[in-house]
Image (cartoon, rainbow, N blue to C red; front, top):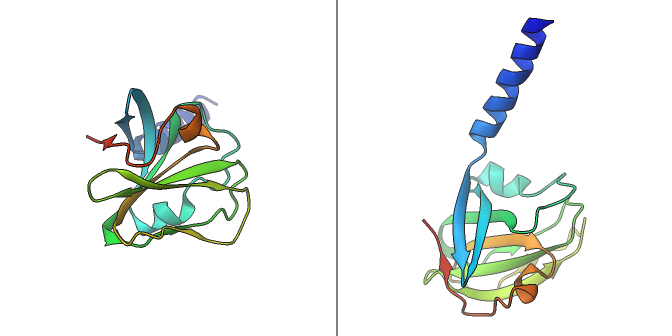
Length: 136
């Protein structure tokens, strides 16, 4: 029984250690963002997440600037996505519906990152287009 408990603790710590978070700021708002910086992590995104705390979300990083698309396969919560350009400014914001398989794409070809938050988070916090995203 003790070995089973120790194994469970080890597995929990290992999973948490592999989850990479960063703090970011947009205006006066401080965010805690889970990092998706590999193809596997970007593909998984927020799949299977049932709820997202108020100032938590996910940031997707790509290796270069390009037009970027997002989808909501196996994602059960309503989200908003902000596309971020090379200047680290928000250039487009879209609302995303749960389990929608249609891609939502940026019109800009200068996208290096995207932030997903609870639906309406950007407007609720007065985050507008061209707001600067401060990253570590």
